Image (cartoon, rainbow, N blue to C red):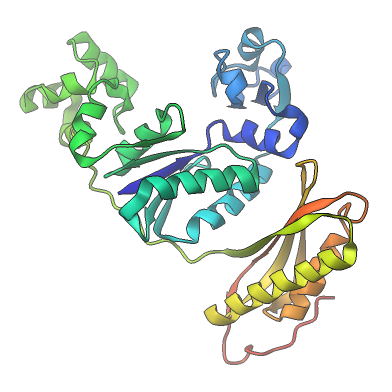
Length: 349
């Protein structure tokens, strides 16, 4: 079974996670309304008022006059998604990305996919403040539809025997590769749902949809020849720790960072790799977060050097003045160690 994890309204969800004052309020992310900007993300509260991605910002504000506007911060959203996918990557056999907001997983232990998907959604909310939904199905196409129509609880599982019944009521334009012009042509001949498309004679379907008729029919039946690729070697590694209680004690926080650095160093050693940069993410008591990154002078896997970098980054946050409840330490710029570099001591500064 394939699990598809989706963060609806990703851009707005990240803005709400970063700023607790925005939670529960309609948030729209996008361009300048005065310059015909368009919506790139909308929170659940804004979507409930009819706001959709791609809509002109002026129209969105007519529908949701009390919306809070935020400019698109694509680099920041990509960083947050990279962190999220590190968590998802940890215990899956295969992982494939679908845009920024969606991730396919093939679980290492698929026996209880429903419980596992539920646990992942809970963790994404708890650790990143991002609401996620999940679809579980035999193929990618069906898993995506299951996630997008998960309903209450945010999780929908479609078993093999249920696939055709599940797909039947959906409009034909949900089929991957079937564009609006083809959907319009089908509608003109009384074919609007996937069930109606499946009922067509194959020759008639080919007349209406052209060379892709066979592929379209496969999707309509819930088949999908594509298989998830083996998960790529991670470009980052991370470790996280929730403190025993919110703390402003810099010494205790530094000790926790040293423990995280030790664990990262052990993983780097096992994989015979070294890191070129260190990122520290601190979660404050009020739910806001701060992320700081430091590029090292050269790749290293030494725990002391990683810990020193982490403490240097800590000094660039409000640690000591604001209570911290959670720490995340990540390394990136990973390089394979060669015989000439193994065990090499590299300076941070």
